[in-house]
Length: 76
Length: 162
Image 1 (tube, rainbow over the protein chains, first blue to last red):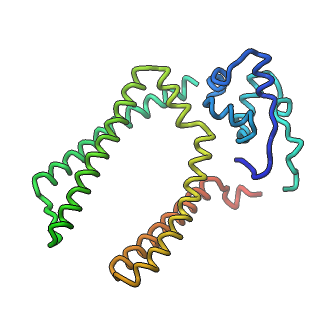
Image 2 (tube, chains in turn green, purple):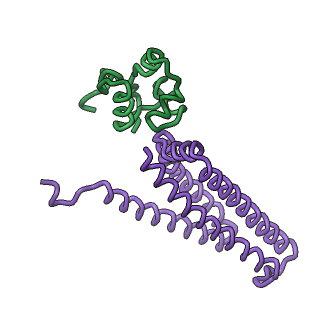
């Protein structure tokens, strides 16, 4: 689930602020815990594809617009 | 989400039944112990007392743990918000990931510690030595079976490969 050394940056915090949403509220909306949202925001944990999809969908964006995969090595 | 919460409610109901069964079983075992149906006769007063204290401790601790679980489940059934919170806690992918990592590491660390313990025990007591070896063997057999089971669950057969 979490590849060593790969940090997927996200715009979740920025989007939350934009929508005036707390971590707990977002967590509740996408069916996870506040702690998980915190960990994803600070880059300690990489969300699964399903959770990434739910978060992106919640903000009406695509996964790539919320998560930055530029540092993910396609060959490794 | 409502579907998952309904499923969780049903799951909690069956967990309550299971927990009541376990607590009843523990109570029965505790009763057997108190009635001296299976007396501890190690031939040494201190050893008897030690094992006896251990048994009482185990029964009481387990019963308290299961009773606490029972109370938590009953509360969750009465309160929708609590039930939802419990569902999120138990199914949170980060928690699942942490548990997977713990399981993976704990197994290897356990085996190494037990191997060292067996090496040391071999100098003093053959029974302890053999017991530890059996534990290592059983532990690794279980790991092998579980690995096979979960590999099969996430793999496709040869025919589906093409």
